Length: 69
Image 1: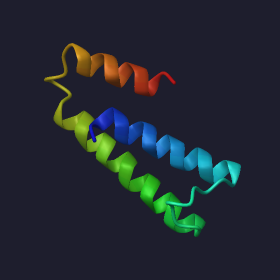
Image 2: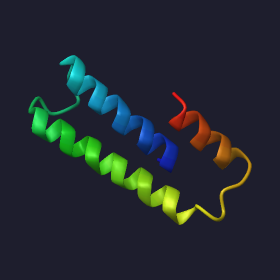
Image 3: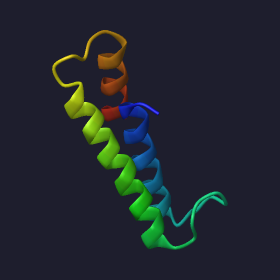
């Protein structure tokens, strides 16, 4: 999973928490759900920082798409 996908997954999980919808494959405990979202957000941040000066082409487009949703 790349940085933009981690970002979108974190957003999806937080939105699921807000909507009260927890998929069968995810933990029913809201705290666990938010912890998983936090991990994805942290991985997205790490990926963005690691590639901040080397992002080109398709990677730029993937980030722009992820953050402009």
